[in-house]
Length: 201
Picture 1 (cartoon, rainbow, N blue to C red):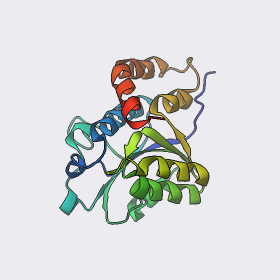
Picture 2: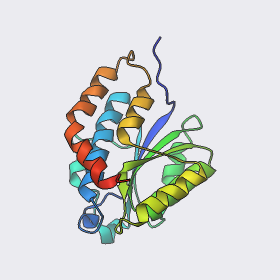
Picture 3: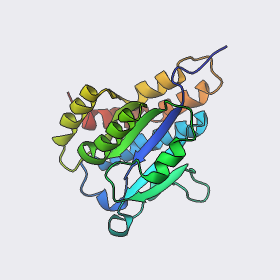
């Protein structure tokens, strides 16, 4: 019987807020990758955790993600924070209800601050961490490769959204594969552009 390769996956969306749009390097690319992973999360029944950073000053999560909107994507937790890490008490309490370890896939901003501190906390709590290189950014683009190199050294897996989706599925024989591959194909052209802007070598 076909089985998924990655067990206990969870999607973490870090601080993708409207007021960051003009400041973050290639913000639209980060949003595009996040939308793809959100679509796949619905197909694969992956829980979604989202945060905002000081919402009173920096605003709501970007509306095109449709998090917790009528007819949109329901998150398990959508918490506001002043912490830089996403692991607020509410997020930690929700994580504790799942079998350990989770396979945590992280997208959002900023790579060297909130994404880094979230990944470090999750690693220290014994979870597996995947940081999506085509789904994270910072105001200064030069911060991103330095942050990703550090996170690799700390034990996180740095990969791309498409690679992670195929690894998550693991077997073309699983029932959801046709729907997941549809998401991949529909995002092919935008994915190419995102890789060229966020993942230059």
